[in-house]
Image 1 (cartoon, rainbow, N blue to C red):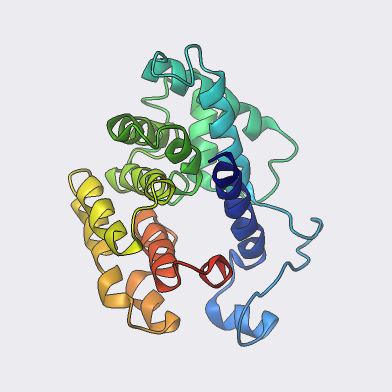
Image 2: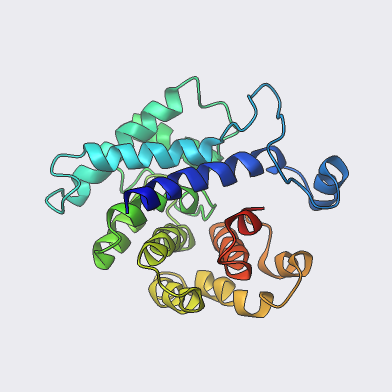
Length: 258
């Protein structure tokens, strides 16, 4: 199990490092720059060393460290306020760090600024932001609470509120954490989509509608699938795209992540 926990954190960092150089490029630009297959290995990007991660991995690490540092953690003795206060401290430290130079999302930065100004974690998030910044970082919640489903959902939703208040963003945070939990439990991939839809539909029907399109997308080649699912700038598109990539090749990490 320890190896699988390590594999999750390393796996998300690898995927992030591969995708980092393409983050703001269109599909034609990606193919023009990297070839017809797109990125197939680490590439140099600006001033960063080969294989550098983006703010996605940085915030995932900050979230993990905050969860472990809260009084009473990692057991359920830690209150939600205690957990989110510890996570908020880690987020603020990340925002002030010189390592925060990887084009972080505006909502993440705005939430951190509002935390610095003294707003509570329940109020600091941008109320109408449904960007993917919350969904990108909640894998550690799926690891920590993988055998406590209600707690997982509660903590994942709360973790979104620090920066993203929209119901779609909260649902995205839950979906990523739950997907990690399902993988740890060795849930058959064919059951993933139904489990994710059941957990997220009560939180955001719009999120569930987009996620539900994965079934229609699965038989399609990737260009057509992502035309249907979206490019990942908002939570529902990002999670739907990730689930599509996984379900197309659930036994092949390299194929899925590329």
